Amino acid sequence: MFSRSIYFFLYRNRRIIITWTIIILAIVLGIVFHIDKEIIAVAVVIFGIIANAFAGLAGVIAMVPFVGPLLVKVFSLPIFWLFNALGYLVSVIAIKKGYGRDVVSYRMVTVIFLIGFAVGFIAAKLI
Image (cartoon, rainbow, N blue to C red):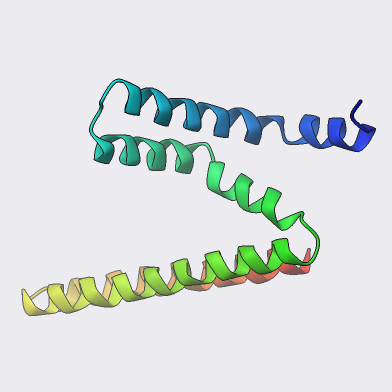
């Protein structure tokens, strides 16, 4: 019925499939039981981050020839920009409240994180 490659794909990505099945089931049950949508969204994001569901989904999307890697780049690069903009916004608010020295150490940690994020992104593309 199915070719061997589909069985191999399902076996290789069984953890991602199980994780996303749990996420979809939680969303459906939350809607059925009339749980607040914000609570469902926060729970899905927290569970997705802990279980690496979003990275797994990006990996599965990236396996689609030609279009997949382009989609992953289009969706992952704005996250880098968002982290950078959020860092600047928090820095401006902290400086206005008088935490100038703390801002320097915070921005140093943020820059190190963003450099690590960029290096990891480049290393992942090379490997």
